Image 1 (tube, rainbow, N blue to C red):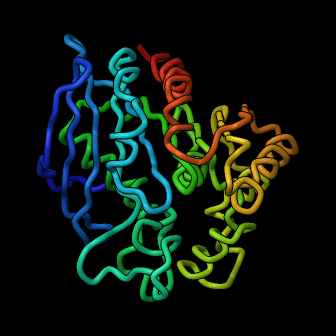
Image 2 (image 1 turned 90 degrees about the horizontal axis):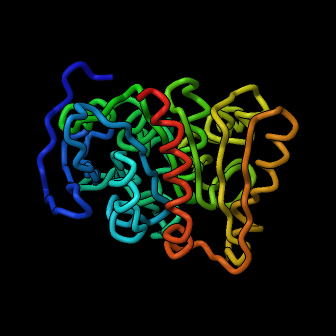
Image 3 (image 1 turned 45 degrees about the vertical axis):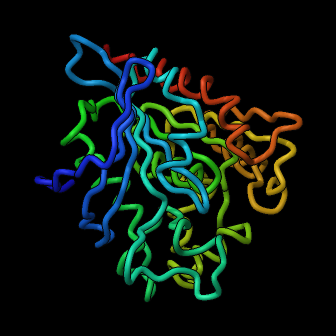
Length: 288
């Protein structure tokens, strides 16, 4: 982590549920661009530091989607947990997008990797941004207890949450995901993203594939996953059975809940967000 991260600028603040919803902007050393993140901070008089749950959003999203659509702040205020939602990729002048204008790669689709291939390698460093830079920046301006962290995400962000937790054993006390891309090495979205960001050598992809990481020996606290069975991406992109098989083969604790009638949208997330936050809150409060 940077010893002296730049102090972020407050873009907006609003009171809600006895807390404050912020949006911050700062210049990222990792991506070389301005980056934004949203943070909900509950009022907890007498407590100097609070646990944090990081939420990583999916394809095409920004820090705004989770903040305005998930309905998470009410429960976070009750639990006394800070919620931080970063953007999904670098943006700005000079940041390349998909050369064909597609929505599933480039801008809004950083896949939480550190790209190694030109022209992506200059700015697409979302792994290092989330794992090292953002925690230091956020803790510099918010009362975050970095000894009590949880992480969760949706779709591409679920992939990010799972792989980041698996690569950093001991950092996150809890992890969960909504409709995650669990095996990007084995689906069109992931093959496109990892192939372009990292190159054709598939062995380099394994560090960004939750199923591969688990099969290679990585472990994290019990994983909670919710998956809608009316999700149009279920069979072609998400493939939760592969995560189920990898966890069963290796003893990685997993709770995978399948839900009839639910799709890939934030209506699905809003339905089950309280359950996820209580899952995180139970673990994060163990140090109190």
